[in-house]
Image (cartoon, rainbow over all chains, first blue to last red; front, side):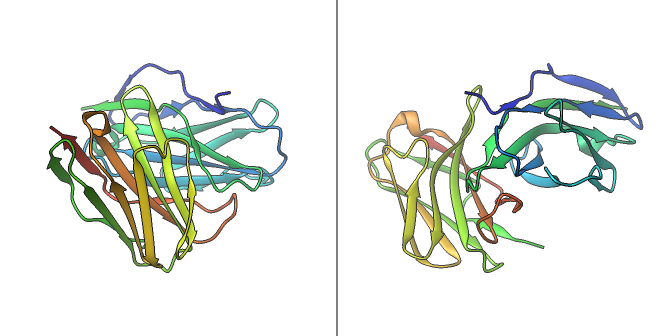
Length: 114
Length: 114
């Protein structure tokens, strides 16, 4: 069963605008961690932000924030004030159940236009 | 900052060759991982290691082996390369076991088997 779902088609975003990337997850565990990664066309996978299932506050890291809705099992990434360098694939991932493995979604493509 | 270094960004090999992909991390991380990434299939875990000389199969270990003789180095070996192993290979490391630990990735190796 797919644990992480990212279903948005590729997105075009105007520079300086905010963009929200959707991620829903599936787990029966109470304790889990959610991660977002960025992969530019050059290929490297860059860790952006982390949210723990017991964290009461939404995670923030610079221009990145996470809209965590536990009851809905969603962990959407918000990028504020988009820059041209934000053009990339974005992957949502989860680790649960004492599992050392990360389950990745299929990714969201974002293109920032001037 | 965590630094995960993969030996090659691009590699071209021939069918039947034995291929070595090397990965080194400089943060004394316990765990290291090898993934392959293919369009439409996302990231798939090949092998991981949670300690020196310890390894565990991931989701797609067939045709691959790994070696971890030193804590900082994790090698992926294609015993007899085949064209269906043409892919992007990503190495990652994490500090310890635990659902809250992010994995940090290298720049990736684009491997072509001719």
